[in-house]
Image 1: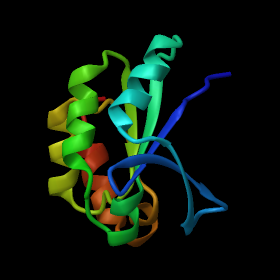
Image 2: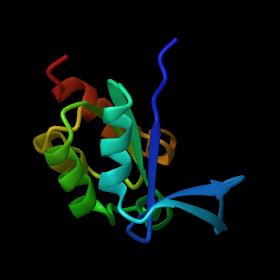
Image 3: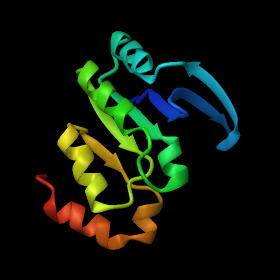
Image 4: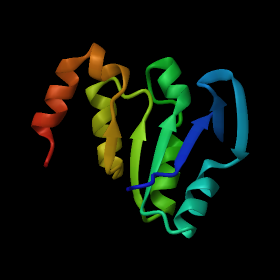
Length: 122
């Protein structure tokens, strides 16, 4: 079994939502970079990041924080939230994100998924 500790980002903080309700958040770290460093120090080989603001608005909101996490930790990153356009895919892949998670876009924009797969280096 693989365990992926999650760093869910909303309002610039690392949070957990109660049953996916954006109005019911618990802040676990004021700085999501600290959360990522924590999981790395605990031996995690991967972290799962979700840009909750991005998921809600359909475009990346917390790119700068995610970029800082990528620069400050040396573990693999799986990322989701607000990935709905080819430019966003390219931006995250160029940043060095290891895996992207397509949620709504996998259903609503099959062309994006097909293009991403056909252009990937896998």
